[in-house]
Length: 283
Image (cartoon, rainbow, N blue to C red; front, side, top):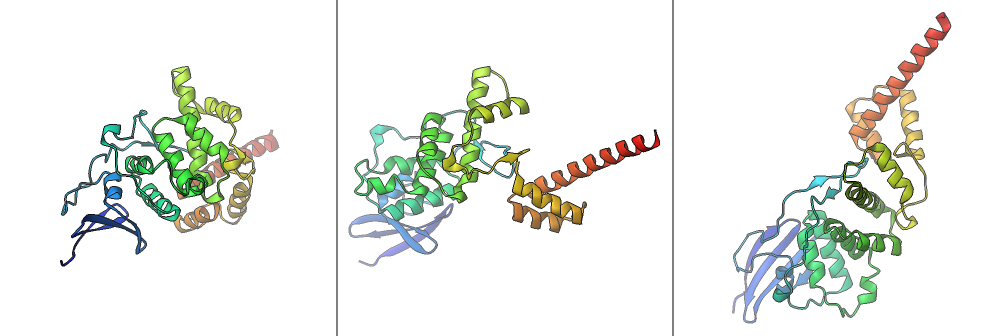
């Protein structure tokens, strides 16, 4: 029998659906390499089961708000909602290698589809042959933390973040989730939105765990190393053009808007100090 391939694209995943003598299989590709080859994966991601369907499937979900943490954009769940499918419609057992699981987790995380990420994690067998290795894989742990955050399961989120040492590349996103979760809990407890002082007190009460923090102290939301670099550039040019702002943003890990705001505030402080000095001189 001649194998027929009908490709379609979903988010970052390129999927080929091939029909042959033994049913249907789905090949997920990331970076040109096969990741998974099973219809169960297709079901786990919540895609349509039709052979020629290009639908995105259930669970596209409404867009949520975004965290205002400096330089970091993390979606904030509007309200905790269960993301796991009904147990009565259990998916087939998926037997993936650790690298395959990590690749799918990273791809779904990059696509921003939290519900399908939750479905995929739920579909993994409890008695996975490499369960101990899975529980140590950073991509899988980060995916579990993201799903816990968006489902409002903050206790599980804290447990994951405090129990495993993450690499520096994951720190920004995980730190934002840690702080935002504590902010939301404090708001729920107090029954009102938090102001800057309230958030400062929350950060003091719940400092970042060393598992997601390199230990460097922050001052005024920016690390001292970042502020030193900003000051050096300011002495060279207090009015950087957009190109220089982008260069400085890349060098510091900030956004061009944050860089522009820092320079604006610094110029205002310098003008105020100069005016005060003139007043003292002529008085």
